[in-house]
Image 1 (spheres, rainbow, N blue to C red):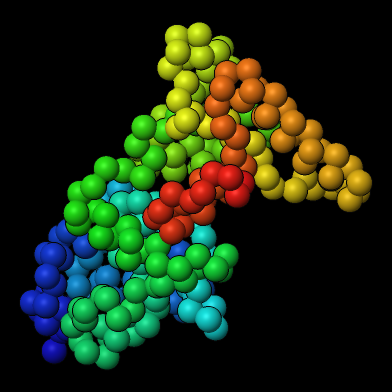
Image 2 (image 1 turned 180 degrees about the vertical axis):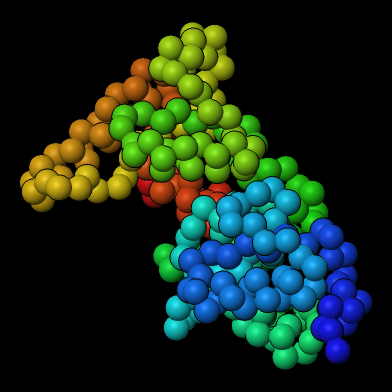
Length: 240
């Protein structure tokens, strides 16, 4: 007997609306994902898309998931972020089971509760996390990584200031506020000595601070963006 009718009968959101996406899954875990999706008529997306309803994330022995772009985007959208055990439970029950007991609570950086906070924010339709914030990215970033950061900021409701000229123009126009942030790269440079590494990191900070002082804005390391999204809660600016 085909499993599909049972799965479809228990789909609360409608099978045609279910979109699954895996995050850092092994080959075997991907197989389970595709199987459950096939049984319940859901779509599987390899990349993050705004219509993804469930991100299935690999977890370590502590139940923590990696902080991937898919996970962070899902937090911002309020999508489910679930462990692979949810797929196994669905298979065993021959139906889609309640997601909440399988929701990921922790990421590998020690951030707790972001997925649930994201769901509740989306359900309550509150303003976006970075609403009213302006971000200017100063200095060098790995291009692909910077693009991910820009996507996260925009999805979170922030505004990206594209150029230094635009930032200065905002300053002259009296539009710089405490929510205008100069962002610098906190990732350690690769392929250099510890001494050079420290010098480069200090230079990045000083350049960002010089610019921020000129226009009256605040400075943050890029990790403030990631930490705030991972918790789905604005982090203190003074710590970064």
